Image (cartoon, rainbow, N blue to C red; front, side, top):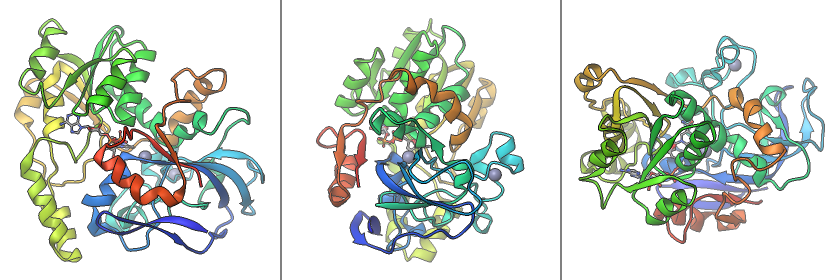
Length: 394
Ligand SMILES: NC(=O)c1ccc[n+]([C@@H]2O[C@H](COP(=O)([O-])OP(=O)(O)OC[C@H]3O[C@@H](n4cnc5c(N)ncnc54)[C@H](O)[C@@H]3O)[C@@H](O)[C@H]2O)c1
Ligand SMILES: [Zn+2]
Ligand SMILES: [Zn+2]
C-alpha cells in the first residue's frame, strides 16, 4: 500500500510499504478514506526528531471502512463506516473505566514512562504505524473504532478522531462559568474549534489570539473577538483586561504548544538538539528540554485570579521554567493533557448527525492525495496558501 513516511528532519516521503495484517483478535483493518494532518504532526516534522525512525508511517486522524476484523471483534462488521481515535485504548482497564483513555493501562508505553500508545507518534508512544496510508491496523478496535452513519461526507465525522474531542476536552477543562469569558491562544484547528465549542456551550465572550492574519480573520467570522499576538503584543494583556472589567478572563485555553512564535531562548536549545547525535539529543530533550513558552506565559497572565488555565497544546520539555509564585498567589487552576478521545465521542456525535452544529463540513481548507503529502507538510508548517486544515483522501 501507499503510506506517508518520515525520513528525517523536514523530510517526508510517500512510499510503498506492506499492507497491515490482523495481529491480535481485537484488531481490525480499515481502508482509510480520509486522514487528517494535525499540528501535532508538525512537532514530529521538525522538533521531536530524536524519537523518530526513518520509515515511520505518520498520521493519527483517520476514518474509513472496515475491511477485516479479528476473531473477538463483535461490535463491528466488514463494510462498517468508522472513525478511529488517535489514542489507542482498551476500554476496560482502571484508566479507561475512569474516562482517562489517554492513560490506558493496557497500551501505556512503560519503557518510556508514557501514557497510552498513539497512532503514528514516535517511539515514546509505541511506534504504532500511522494513518496517513491506504490501510490501517486498528488495535483494540473492539472498543476504539467509533461507528458513524452513512450519508454525510467524511468531513462531517472525521474530526471525531482528534480535533473535536480535543477541543471539547479543552473547553471542559477550562470550566468557563455561565456567561463567562474565555481567551483562546492559538487559532489553528484545535483553538478555533475550541472557540466554536465554547460559544456553543454558552460562553458570553470568546477572545482569540494568534499571529496569522487569515486565521484571525477566520475566527472573527465566527464571532470571536480577535487579537494579533505579534502586532498587538504590548497591548494584549490590557485589551483582555479592558474586555473583562479589568479582571482578566475567567479561563484561558493554550492551543499553541511548544512551538510558539516569539520566544527565542528555547528555540536555540531545540535547534541545538536537532544537530546532536540522536542518543545525546534524546537525553538533552528529556533531561534538559525546555519549550518555547511565550503563548503559555501570556495565557497565564490573561486569566483572572481564581481562574482556570486549560492547556491543550502539546509540551514535551521536562525542565520548563514556570512562574509558580505568581500562579500560587493568583490561585490559578491548571488542567492539561492529551485528549481522552473516546470519553467524549458519544457526547459529540449528536452534534454531527442531525445537522452540522459546529460547522465541520467546510472546516478543511485542503483535500489532497497522499502523493501530495511532502508539499502539504511544508505548506501547513509555513501556514502558506491558506493551509488551515489539510485532509488526505487516499
Ligand atoms: N492535547 C491533545 O490531545 C492534542 C491533540 C491535538 C493537537 N494538540 C496540540 O494542539 C496544538 C494546536 O494544534 P493545531 O492542529 O491547531 O496546530 P497549529 O500548529 O495549526 O496551531 C497552532 C497555532 O498557534 C499559533 N501561534 C503560534 N505562536 C503563537 C503565539 N505566541 N500566540 C498565539 N498564537 C500562536 C499559530 O499561528 C497556529 O495558528 C498543537 O500543539 C498540537 O500538538 C493537542
Ligand atoms: Zn491530531
Ligand atoms: Zn484501557
